[in-house]
Image (cartoon, rainbow, N blue to C red):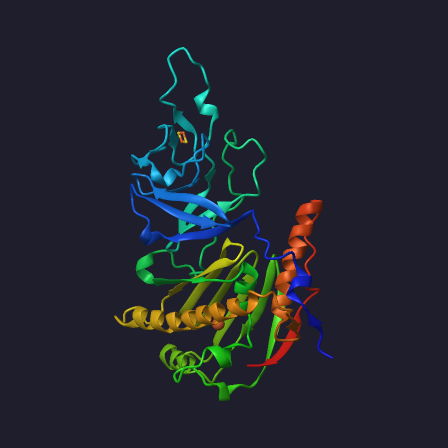
Amino acid sequence: MPELDSPQRQAPDSLMLTGFWYRALPADRVHRNQLHEAVLLEIPLVVGRDRDGHPFALRDACPHRGMPLHCGRFDGENLECSYHGWQFDAHNGQCQLIPSLTADQNLKVERIYAGSYPCEEQDGFIWIYIPDPAPPGAGFTEPQEAPEPAPVIEKFGLSREARYKLAYLTADMPVSIDHGIIGLMDPAHGPFVHQAWWWRSRHSIHEKTKNFEPIPNGFRMSAHTPSSNSAPYKLLRLYANADSITTTIDFTLPNRRSETIRAGKYWFSSLTTVTPITRNQCRIDVVAAWNIFRWLPFGPALLKFVFAKFVEQDRHTMELQAEGLKHNPHLMLIDDADRPAKWYFQLKAAHLEAKRTGSAMQHPMPGPVTLKWRS
Ligand code: FES
Ligand SMILES: [Fe+2]
């Protein structure tokens, strides 16, 4: 008997995990000396670049009386609130000036902070680290450091961008983070949602067996040869002249799916994230890097077209799903096709439990697992 389980029973309702890096904005949309609004985990942010081009992120609310800071002026170094002109260092949020103070008033301006967030540019995106909720006393809270650098896409030793191509796609999804993520890892929707003559049809559905193994904070679909019935893989095999093409797919908390395909010396690598914007809204960002078809002028355009089609199909599906979810229906997860979704909920619960108790995280997978489904 396949086991039935409801997503609601597995984890707190669409809880958004703090203490992780999240993608905020495509880097090419953030320009020097300009202020941009962004929302991550229901936190309003103002994002910009200083005059050297380094990105920064502050809470988009002045610690004085809450004015959105993106309404203020930015001189490439300090941000000036539009209400009473307080000035803040764009990187650490420290208050630099309160214009209303007289010479004999000794308020310690430097003890005041507009909340700031660790911010990095990586693989075409501005990443922001969202720490665990800061202790009370906001306004006097010094910036926190991120415990690790922002995630990077695997590039198999290539560090110079001239050697590989990079492209991104982004789409808003009107569903909670949990539905966004389980949609991302769901193998059974492929034949129904992602039909295309050059990819596959619903008639190509067949039984698949995949091996999974636990990895820190997530799970891995072990290296395997991709499905042989799809045209791109056939093409890739011819082009790369490699006997074997292997692909590895990892999911790690809070929201990352990385996929690498290798064929001889050629590779294609992607890092997809589903980012919680609000409780009922998320955004999918796919960033891919590859050294295949690098010198073909239409390579990136073609790849972008293929991915854009997939992402649009997923987005459209979730838009329709959001209609159905409005009335809070009873939902279920079945074995084996929804087992990765179950692991996601279990990982999330285990992560929260480890944080609560301060003990090491208990991984929900005891060891390697083989799953079977038809897709
Ligand atoms: S609200 Fe920002 S300076 Fe007063
Ligand atoms: Fe999909």
